[in-house]
Image (tube, rainbow, N blue to C red; front, side):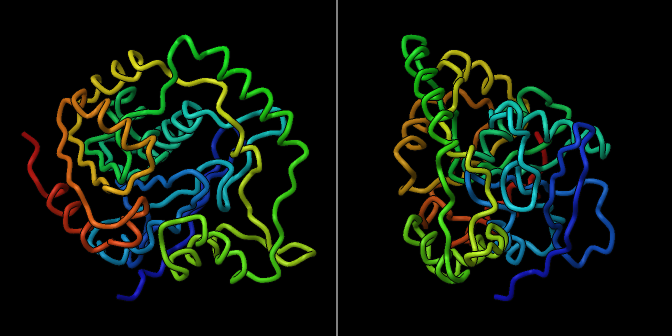
Length: 291
C-alpha cells in the first residue's frame, strides 16, 4: 500500500514556539476540523504515515510535539512536562478555532490527549488511544525520590552528546534495534527525526527529552482526571505493551466513563506495523453515532 503524500504545515504559537507537522493529501486546504494525531515519546509525526495511507478518507493532521521532529525545542531554561504539551495543544486549538476534534494519540501522545480532553471537553468529541491507557503516576511517598532523580538527570543531560551516524540508514538501524518494528518502519521515523551534521547525521530531538520528569500525578489525581472525560474513547492496545502501560491499563481502565478497548495485533507501534487493522477499528468508531 502506497503511503499518502503529506503536505507540510507549521503553526506559530503566541509563546514563539513553532509546531511543525503534515496533513494528509489530497485536501487542498487545511480542513476546519482536522483529525489531530499526537505521537509518542521520541517519535515524530511520521509515525502516522501508515495510518494516513490506510485512512485516506480522514483529514489527518499529524504534529511534531515540542522538542521532536521539526518543531521548536523549548528554551534552555525549560523542561518537558506533560501539562506543557497539553497547554501547547489547547493553545493551538484556540488559535485555529478548532472544537470537538477527533484526536488520535499514541503512547505519550495518548496521555496528552487524555488530559486535554478531560480538562477541555469542548475541544474533543472522540478520542482514540493507541497503546496508551491511563497515566504515569507516582505515589505521594515517592515524591522526594522522583524530584531527586529529576534534578540529577538534568545535571547529567548537560554532559550528554547526541550519537552521530555516517548515514540515515545507520541511524535507522540504531532506531530499529531499540524498537519492535522493522527497518522500513524505523526509516519513516528517521527521515523526519534526523538532521545533517558535520559528522553525518544525528537526531533532531532535544536531549532534555530523556530527563526524568520532576512531577507526576498521584493515582488519585490521575483517576479524577480520567473520570472527567466526557467523550467516547477507543483504546487500541497491544498485548506486547511496555510494562508501564500494561500496569496503567490494569489500574485505570475502569475509570473511563465511555471506553471501548480492543486488543490488537502488533507491538507498541501497532498503528505503524498493523495500520490496516487499526484503521478499520478507527473507521467504525468514528462513524458510530454518539449516544
